[in-house]
Amino acid sequence: MLDQLLPNDLFAIALVFMRIGAAMMLLPGFGESYVPPKVRLLIALALALIVAPVVSTSLPSMPGDVLSLFVLAAGEIAVGLFFGALARTLVSALHVAGVVIGFQTSLASAQIFDPINSQQGSLLGTFLNVIGVFLIFATDLHHMMLVALADSYTVFVPGAPPPIGELSQTATRFVARSFALGLQIAAPFVVVGMDFYIGLGLLARLMPQVQVFFIAVPLQIMLGFSVMAMTMSAGLYWFLTNFESGLIGFIGRG
Image (cartoon, rainbow, N blue to C red):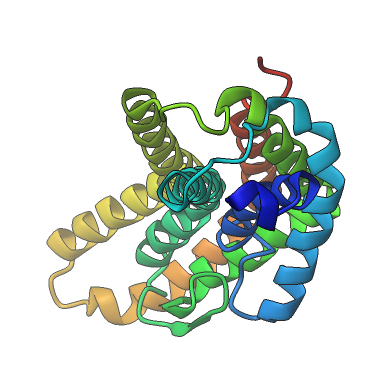
């Protein structure tokens, strides 16, 4: 029997490690491609050793057969991936904002490797992603991520059937919230860019001989950087506020 091969304490730590380890694969800052897998493994194991005694009362008893153990482990991994994906979705708002800002400043074609998304991305989107993750750690919001992950045991009880409907609604709400947040951060650039293009259109109609786009691109880039200098601090503060409010729903529930 499994209970004779695996002690109860070791089973509790392993069960907690499954959820935390799965979340560590996607959490911002912890699950990035530039973080060595061994470092993530050690962090997840250390957190499991800390969290397991705290949540031991909510953990189920050890299953008596391998199939039940597999189902329980799959559920814990799914919850961890779901939680990590929610936090990652909130951070993706910065990528949306960067893409919109890139189009409004004629810098959409400037591509660079994005270490957050592990792919080629726009220059401004990569800049916002990197500085956003940096601010999460600089403002200690990564502590809130870890606390919310520990408190997720009061929201998603191990061994209980997963609330598929509630999970779907939460994921949909976070995706919509992330997209709206990205547009809100980029809103000043959209307004200025629209006014700029309207002015270019009027200039092209009034003076057809002027090469409008030849003189417009340098002005648009300079105007975009000016707007960024004036609004970036407010945009990043709004991102941190929404990131905190998104995580706080998982803390202290139960």
